[in-house]
Amino acid sequence: MQPERDPDVPWVQELSGHPRGECEAAIAEAQGERRLFQYISREHASEGRDSYVEIDAPLELHALTRLLRPLHVVEVGVSSGVSSAYILNALEKNGRGTLHSIDLPAQSRPPRNPGKPPRMSWSLPPGRSSGWAVPFLLKKRWDLRLGDKAAVLPLLAKELPRVDFFVYDVPHRDPVTRVELRDFDPLFPPGAVVLVDHGPGGEMCSALRGWGRTVGARPVGRSNLGLYGVRRPVGSVGAPLRSRANVEKTSGVD
View: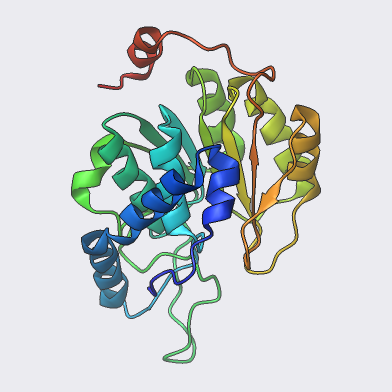
């Protein structure tokens, strides 16, 4: 695992709606989480690989979680759990919130040629489960669900009172993603952020562009990555805002 060299502060600012100075401070805080980075790096190295495919912007994920202070984060796609760990660490610092992650584990097969990396770069090492690189102490705010997103996402959409941060990091097809965003749309309150990762250099999918058009917001791309986000405009129609006491009662947040 290589440290992120060039975090995109303007991207965080535009998605969070916070002043530049606060975004810079949030990124700097994420960069200071050296023990977390070192732990994940050691876990990856113990399996003989430098990295597993994840969103290549863990610092921005941490910063957005700190700035948005979400009660409910939904993450689709986990692999070793780099993104999960950074989001969970930020939730712990916030002192509130739950990460609901969905993953369909793909196990590595022994390579035919020794030393050759597995065909699927997100596949799990033998004997490991989804999120195996996440530190144990961060898992108390983690609702990890294993299974096909086609089955799990609809159930989650019925259970949660709202979703403040939605992170979509799996190979996807526009017709399916379009339906999934539509199903979760009533749960996204004003100010909620939706991220979709399209892989290194990937172009934005029509599903995210269409959802952004529906809510009246322009998707914003993270520099040099195929990562795009939309922030639901404040004042738009979304999940009804509830009092802090009622939301935390339904979410089980301390």
